[in-house]
Amino acid sequence: MKKTIILVIALGTLTGAYGQKERNFSLFLENVFSQGDVLQTNDFVRGMNQKGIPISDFTASDTRIGWQTRGTQQWHHLHNLPYYGMGFYNSLFSHKEEIGHPTALYFFFGGPISSKQKYSFDYEFGFGLSSNWKPYDEIENPFNLAIGSYMNAFIDLKMGFSWYLGKKFTLNAGLRATHFSNGALRHPNSGINLAAPFVGLRYDFVSREDLANSVPRPKHDKPTPEFNISIVLGERSVKETKTPNIKKVSLKSLSVGYLKPTQGVFRYGLGFDVGLDENRGITVSGDSVVLAPQKEQLFLGVAPIGQFRANRLALQAAVGCEVLSEGKLVKNQFYQRIGIRYYLSKHLFAGIAIKATNFSKADYIEWSLGFRARNG
Picture 1 (cartoon, one colour):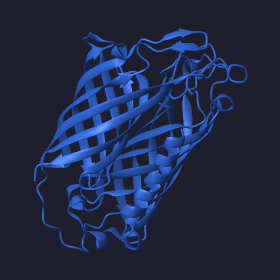
Picture 2 (cartoon, one colour):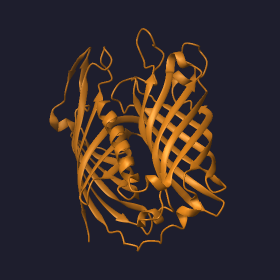
Picture 3 (cartoon, helix red, strand yellow):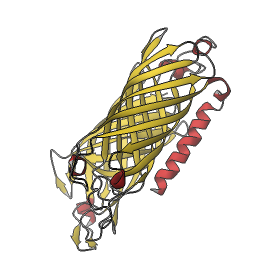
Picture 4 (cartoon, rainbow, N blue to C red):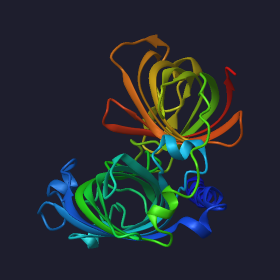
C-alpha cells in the first residue's frame, strides 16, 4: 500500500498544480452527507458475522475543498466549466467493531452534463485511499471476509442535480456509488460496495456569474488520434497459503493501444496486453509456493478501450478477452480494467488501475508508465 499512499500525495500535488493559477479566484468549500445501503455482495455483509445479522446501512460525510474552472482554457469549455479538488470522507457502519471506522482522502473531478441559469445535472468521480478499517484476523476478527487490509482503494461515482442558491451557495443532491477494496494485495478481499442518496452544500468564494463571464472562450484545437505503449507492473497476495498473505506474486506486461477522439471529451480504441503473470499455474502446499514455468505464465489479451479526458487527466476503462493463457489458446476468459491516467508531458504518462476478471474478482492493482505518439 506504500505505492497507493504515494499516489494520493501525488494527486494532492496535481490538484494544487491544477489550481495554482486560479486558486485565488475560484476556491470553494463543500460539505456532503450520505445515508444509504451496503450492497449484499458477500456473506459477511449478508449476515455471516459476529452479530449474525446483515450489515445493511451506513452514514457518511465529506468535507471538501476545490476549484471551479473559469473558462481560461479550451478544456474548461469542453467540460462545461468543470470543478476538481480534494475531499476527506468519514463513514460509520452499524458493525463498527468488525469493520472499523473507515475514512478516505481522495481526488475528485466533476462537471455539468447539462446546465441552465439556475440549475445543472452533474457527474463526478473520485479516486483515493481509505484507512482505519478493522481487517480480517484469524483470531480477533475471523468473520470479516470482505476487507483484508487496514488501507484500501476508494472509488466513488456521483450523479445529481445542483441548484444555485444565489451567487455563491449551491445545493447538491443525487445518488452515489462507492467501492472499497485493495486489488488482491491482501486477502480476503471481497470488498465493500455502497449505494446512497447524498445532499451537499457548497460555498464559492467567487460568484458563479463572475466566473462564467470573466473571460472569452478560447479557440478550439482539434484533438488527434494517438498511439500509446506502456510498461505495466502489479503485485498481489497468493490466496491459498496456510498462513494468509505470506507470499506475493507479480505481474509484468506490455500494453499497446490506439485511441481515436470523438467530437467531445471521449476517446475510444483498441488495446493489446502481453506479459507474464506469476499467479497462473502456481502450486501451493501449506506456505510453500512453486511458480509455473514462464511459458505457462504468459498471457495475451485484446480489449476495446474507452477514455474520458480532461486536459492531462483521464479516466480509462477496458473490457478485454484473453486469447492466450498458461501457454494455451483460450476463449470466454474476460478481464476488465478501470483506472486513472495522468499525462506528465506531451509524450509521457503514468497511471494506476484495478484489473479484475470475469466481472467480479479483483486481480491486481496495476501501475503503468508509458509513451504517447500523436498524429499531428
